[in-house]
Length: 132
Image 1 (cartoon, rainbow, N blue to C red):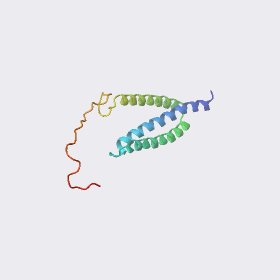
Image 2 (cartoon, rainbow, N blue to C red):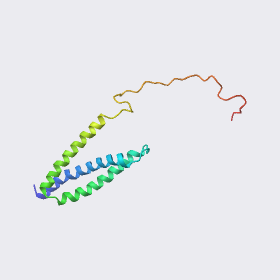
Image 3 (cartoon, rainbow, N blue to C red):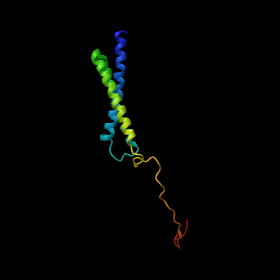
Image 4 (cartoon, one colour):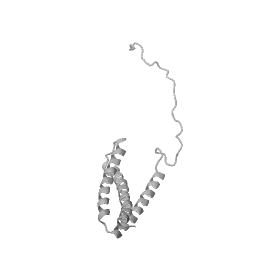
């Protein structure tokens, strides 16, 4: 294999790992520290936006680094990047496994019905008021 193809083959895992790790870290830190409370359904979109910005920065840095690094450092970065992706995947799996189910930890079933209906005994409008 030519040295140019070897560099490309080693650069791809480094770039992919950097982009994915930067996206995960940017989303986590953006959602935890930069999204203000009370945003409702806009909060996840804002957190993903911070993740996208971080991944674009990670893409630029990793492309420049992968083209200028010596081969030994590129091999080390590829191994560390794949290890980082494995740790990220394990952390996400643990977080999903430990997540609450609608505020009821450990409960996958719907809560029992608690509403009751009572008949209305009084008229809806008091006497003497005109209806529209």
